[in-house]
Image (cartoon, rainbow, N blue to C red; front, side, top):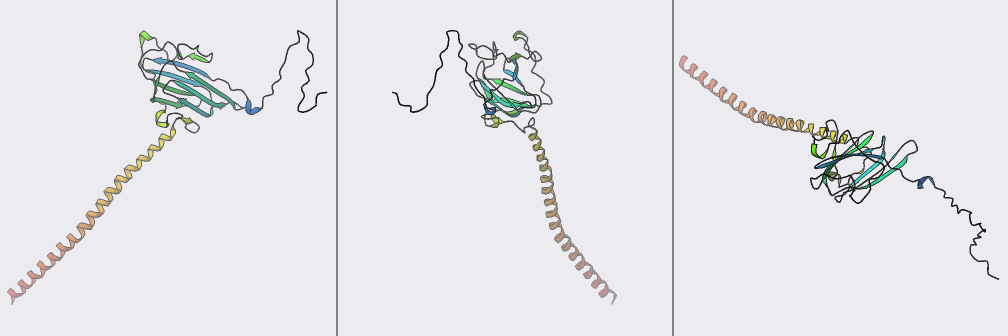
Length: 235
């Protein structure tokens, strides 16, 4: 008789047509991620990538020289996780690329390492994901290379300037890089210049005071000598 040690698994007999059903319970922290919608357009030297995810929280973007573009962030009332990874068609210039974080989307201007037209956003040997769409508002044909997209009013930061995304890291609180407004602190340079002028003015005053005293003393001596001369002449 076999010993009854360890766990025992009882397999109930099944008929030939009986399906094998597995029930999987997913904990809240194990929820599968979703994909945000991505729109793209290009020029001969750059690619415009827009990640459509309104009110994204804890958004992170990564761009690598080999053309690997990744995104993750939470959105929605339940804080659903959205993620994506794209192997772009060719290598990119991370240092020259830039990103703008908006309320409804995250807009990236990715500079190509080599100025040439891509057949599609992802590598030629890959099929474009279903969530990647053409951005017809920004699109131009290869034989009609139009002007660059108007970026007026958008605040950008460089991928490379943020440490290369490992660089961009957490985009929360960037507010479209409103932090650049902190450069307004350079206005302090104006006051610094004023301090220098004030210091110079003070120095001039300190120099002019003894000079004025010396002149007054000399003037007093001259007046006294003239008075003595007049007295001597009158006597």
